[in-house]
Length: 156
Image (cartoon, rainbow, N blue to C red):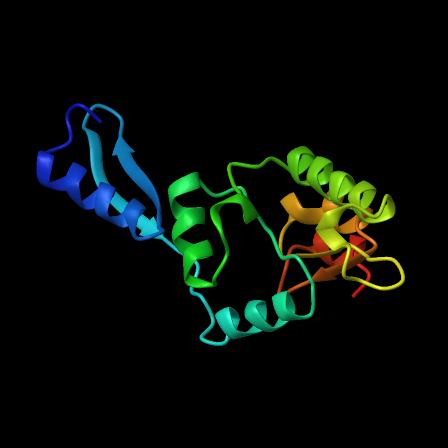
């Protein structure tokens, strides 16, 4: 990024701080010729839904392959605390976390102590990177159009 003008570096940093994932376009011999940002849109009711689930004793976490800064921005918008936001995850990382959550639920630890009689782990996902965790969770929910593999490995 050394050849990128300072104004473009600043714009990319602002996009990332706002929760976007920043990418760059280059042409061989010309270097970086453009930049872009993509970001998830948070549904207006998301914060209220997570607050309601929390009041029911349901612990919600975000598992994402997005970078930490983008994940924290989105997580904050929906009312998650930093320790509930797991970022920079590969599919096997998500699988490991779901497995850990399931063992915590099974052994009656504090994570789900308010759930009766035994808590379950539900995983929502929309892409191929979520497929292993969707398959491992007690309940897997594929969202939206989703990748075919996510749809096939989920329960719903």
